[in-house]
Amino acid sequence: MSQATLLPTLPTHTARVAYAGAIHTATPHGEQHIRLADGRILAEDQVVWLPPFEVGTIIALGLNYADHLRELSGELTVTTKDEPLVFLKGPNAVIGHRGQTHRPDAVQFMHYECELAVVIGKTAHRVSRDQALEHVAGYTVCNDYAIRDYLENWYRPNLRVKNRDGATVLGPWLVDAAAVPDPHQLALRTTVNGQLTQQGHTRDLIHNVPELIEYLSSFMTLQAGDVILTGTPEGVVNVKAGDEVVTEIDGIGRLVNTLVSDAAFNTPAGSTP
Image (tube, rainbow, N blue to C red; front, side, top):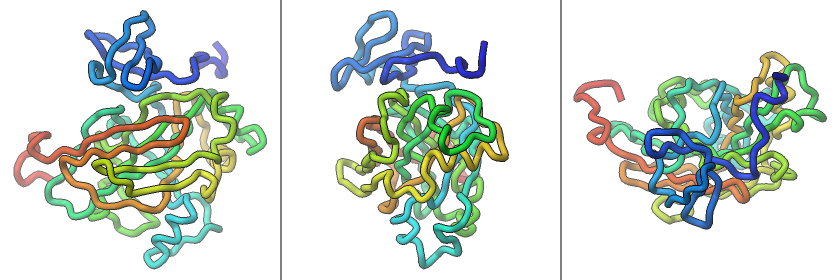
C-alpha cells in the first residue's frame, strides 16, 4: 500500500462513533441524526462520538492569529516575524464531540480555543508550500482548552497548560479537503451557554496552512492522521464547570463540549489538578 492511500477516500463529511459495542463510520442525516455505514439512522445523542479519524501526532500552534497577538501584546515578547510557536500533545488529550472535559475546581482561569484542525492525508517530507495542500486529507473543528494559572509565559506553554487529558476536543466531522476550496476563507465562533464570546476568521492566520506544512515538514516527517491545530483568534474567556461550550467553523462543523467539576471525575482530595 502506498503512503498516499493510508487514509481511504471518504464521503464529504464523516464521523467515528461507538454504538452497541462497536465503532462505526457515520455521515450526517438531517440536523440531529446520523446514518451509520450499515444504514441505521440514530439520534446524535444515542452514540458516543470519537475523534473523526485515527489521530496521529498532534501538532499545536500558539499565537497564530493577528488579532489574538494584538489582544495579548502587553504580555508578549513575540511578533508576527517570529517562527511559528509549535508544541506537541499526547494521545490522551483527545476526546470527541459531546464529550466532557474536566475543569479543576481550584484553578482561576481556564479557557477554550476554537481552532481549524488540518488533518494530514499522506506522508509529507520537505514539502513546498505550493504542494502542501495536496497532502491534506481534510479538516475538522478543535476546541483546545488551556489553564492559564500554569502558564510560565506566553512563549513557552507548559504541559499542565496545554497537554491535559480530555482537553483537546475534535469533531464532529472530518470534512474532505476537496469540499473546502480555501481553508483561509472560514469564519470561526464560540458560544458559552448560548452566548457568543469569540469570533474570528482564518484569513487572519499569521502562518497559513501551506506555510505551516512547509515549515513543519522541513524538519519532521508528517504522516497520515497527524493533525495541525492552527491556533485561535481573540475572545477567549474563563469558563466554569457546567458550562456548555460550542466551537463552530463555517462548512466544517459545530462541536459541543461540556465542562465538569472535580466531583464528576472523582479527583482525590489534595491531588494535583
